[in-house]
Length: 479
Ligand code: BYC
Image 1 (tube, rainbow, N blue to C red):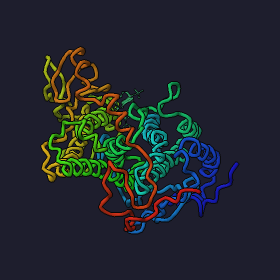
Image 2: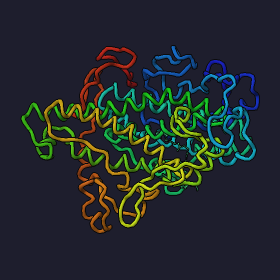
Image 3: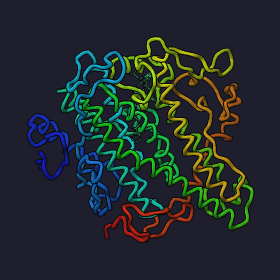
Image 4: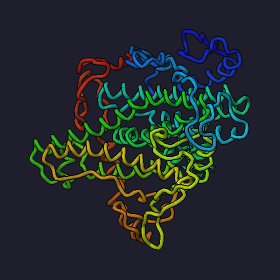
């Protein structure tokens, strides 16, 4: 068994060095985690020194330190946002009661399920992204990928901490299983659909971090209001790191759009739909980007669960999981008598139907998410417009390509028309990437390792990480 030096190895504010029970649980789990990281983490880069941010505390200023680290030596810490004196529960049946410091017996199973589902996504994303270092378009991007990966590792630790500390033996068993399921594995898949999809190229990575990490933000923010205070505090701190992941995604796509538009402008190509001519320039044509957006966005919408859900109603009622920005919402925070408009296919049409608000918690979170995504697309479209190109990226209709919820049994086009399954199949290549699109994107993926240089299909970023200069060596590749 590996001995863990708690004071130096694991930054924490949970009094780890004096908590023998927690130490024992972690001592058993830690070697398996490291084995998992070495076998399922970034393939081929375990011995490189990477310029990484490490969370070392929870002060607003100075919570993180930058420096060169070999990833297996990263100091994955256990950090919870500071406890708020006298915080009371903001929603649900237990509204106005003091928050819980221990797991309420009646909600144990429900709470454990939420923590396990959250925990399962974190290692899943590391597994999905494990080969991307080999095709990184620059050292800057490679470093950002590894930063995202180690922080997803830390987010796994955050959930494992809760399981070890508050759930006894079954918590320890769940923590073990988080290391045993595998993204995309036929026998032991990860729990939620999107986390079993492949992330074979960098466009997929940037769209994943734009759309799927943004689901992470929405879910974590909802859990940050939990009546179970340790969950609220740990998710609040996780949100601090999540911001960078979405930044990597949004700016990654923005840089791709910029490069495509520049190349088109420089070579006098005005028609964005002339994919052949645009691809001859070695950049990603905008219609392919649109089809990739349609895929990642629709798969991510499924992560919100069914629009009308008794699971979600129960966890809201139990004061375990609130809504996005719960405390800013102007209502009674109990929702016994209120309704919420939910888009549903009824009588052959898609209509807004007033449903009991309690059942519509997932639909509402999804609406908030869609609003957030729309703001991201506005930024990408601004870049296209500034190059005088007549093209607009759009989010597909929420019923498009769904496997979960109201639209799961229906064929809905990207623009929201209901149609028969045959027509949908016939036209699906208009909306979803074809194999040929995917192979084209894959053909562009070659590793660029000279400091300050970028692959031809992506523009350089506007600024370095941690104020570093353009030719900074973010990753020192092993000889
Ligand atoms: N795939 O009432 P329903 C992140 C299951 S991402 C497969 O419709 P509910 C991150 C569901 O589990 C955020 N199964 O939905 C991002 C249930 O099964 P059981 C992750 C699915 O329960 C990037 C059944 O269908 N965190 O952090 O209200 C990188 C009926 O469920 C799916 C969370 O999700 C699916 N897509 O809501 C790294 C927060 N959808 O229990 C990290 C915790 C539903 O009947 N999780 N099912 O066997 C939750 O709040 C809820 O579990 C969900 C589902 C929102 C996921």
